[in-house]
Image (cartoon, rainbow, N blue to C red; front, side, top):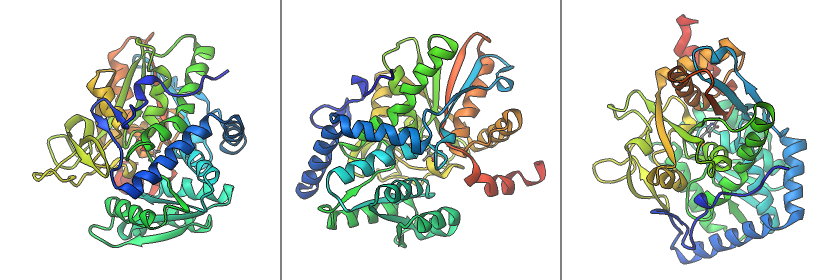
Length: 402
Ligand SMILES: *Cc1c(COP(=O)(O)O)cnc(C)c1O
């Protein structure tokens, strides 16, 4: 029987804080809307009918449980490397886990529509999928630059019946899309739900998204114990906003002997301004309605960020990770674009698995880490998504090296 729910370490206090980070929205109308979402979420997870519906969809629609795979070829230089195969989920990544939860919640609250932003389009596709399945409208805000770049995902969303709102303000990328989506939500919060794509944003989103992602860790802990005995020495995941990492970490939070390791994008190097290593180099402050570490420019505004993996290039990070860093329960490492691209190719050629560039950050760190450890040590990595979306980019970058 798989255990459910979140460790007390990543449940917020009554004000929505995890230690010094997180918080609630103050705007009175929106605060009311957030209270409705929060109460609906708490009621949903206490209602066996909804939990049964969610579990049935996880099993028959997403294809859960996703397996754990012992990557033996990759494990020849030291510690043993195991992969939690979230890339095998329907839609190819972990994002479907929280999108199903959010759309079920919208339905429970009697909403007609879900609204969200998307950068590379991964969250948009997963949300449009869940909305199509459950019969809700879906409105996705996306920067015009991203629409141009991420054509296959735009086509997927259209075919799934989502309405795409192009955003041409500012740089025409993720940050502007968030502002646009939030603006649209403010005008129609009575009949819609804002569906955030990670463990970021104001309360109750970090707790809610972490809850829906916690299936990853609960499954992994039980599968690992059954197949290999006991727990891994370290669990490792890439961190953008932090949802796939928190989903894996949660089940091991109270196993003090298990190290929790998040891997951030060091981009072109931590000594350049072309990275998105938020927990490593960010400063505390408030971004888009919540307190966290974030990368700031000289005026304290969100800095432009970069990663080879578009799912990781966000200047902020979830408040639960900020708290886990502060209390020393998790540690945060980095992988550069170059190390990531090498790991992408290594996993493809040694195990026949093409990872998402996001996930390849965790693989890059794990390969390095394994070489420092004895062969009886065990590392469990969250393979958060598959790499189909990254093939053109990889071919362009690797070209003559292939
Ligand atoms: C979006 C995405 C991520 C980053 O999001 P988190 O909230 O940090 O998990 C990681 N991996 C894949 C495959 C993604 O699509």
